[in-house]
Structures are given as structure tokens and as C-alpha cells.
Figure 1 (cartoon, rainbow, N blue to C red):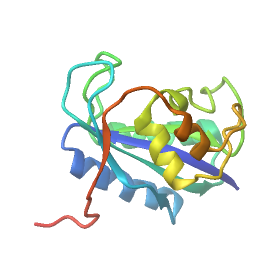
Figure 2 (cartoon, rainbow, N blue to C red; figure 1 turned 45 degrees about the horizontal axis):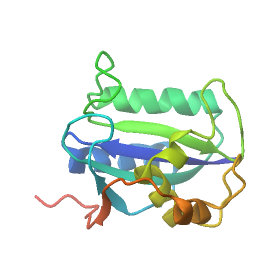
Figure 3 (cartoon, rainbow, N blue to C red; figure 1 turned 90 degrees about the vertical axis):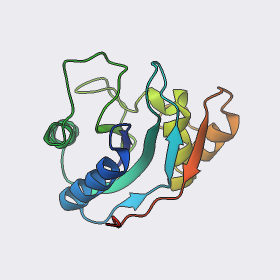
Figure 4 (cartoon, rainbow, N blue to C red; figure 1 turned 120 degrees about the vertical axis):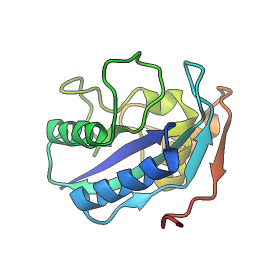
Length: 164
């Protein structure tokens, strides 16, 4: 059984898509660890603000199976694949870590964006502060304390049950 960390992001109908992502991930993995929800400006393009969070789960799936599952979930919820890399999206699910595995195939692990983007690192530091980055060797809390890039990011109150 492996412990995985997954980033969840959306800037199109973001409340709905964050809830959908958690529902889908719960069905796939069972009990989840869930960080706070963070709002951030779009990074790398002009667009609506994103909601981001990080989810932790245990899985028997291999790395490639996790990635395939995440693409299926994204596709079911309107993710467009024929657009610019840095653009708005209904749902973005990225495998950040798979235990302490370091690899380049089938994807790069740990994800490079962990140390580059506040919207990934801050929720990781909140969720698993004492877990160590497999390459840097520092805890996610230490990495967050050393983070110096300026990205606007803040926690937002989030109700997990949709109010109608």
C-alpha cells in the first residue's frame, strides 16, 4: 500500500469541481486526508482565480494507474486537452508524490511544482508537515518556511456539503 499526495485545482465552477473531485477520490481510495482550500491567482496566464488543495490517500494502484484514473476523472468533468498548457480548467488532478518514490517515468515524481508553487507547497505543509520531500530531504513545513517566491494565496472557508 502506497501513500499518495494529489493536488486538486479548478478555476471553472470551482466550488462544484472541488466537491466532485473529493467525491471521486473518496470513491477511488476511501478515507482521504484533505487540506484546507486555498484561493490563488492564476499562475502563468491571465485567468480567473483558482481553488487548490492537496489530498492524501492510501492506494494499491501503481503510479501509471493513478495517473490514468486522474485523467479519466478530469475528462468526465469537462477537462479540455486541446488548449494551452497554462489556461483555465474545470479540474486538474496531479499526482505529487507516491510514497518516497523518485522517478521520471511514467511521470516525474516528486512533482517539480511542489517547490515552485505556493498553491501546492502550502497545502502540503499543512497536511503532512513532517513528511520529507524525497529529493530535498527537508520536511514540507521546512520547505514552506523557506519559500521566497511571491504568489498571492489565501485560505478560504469551504463548505463540503453543497447548499441549495
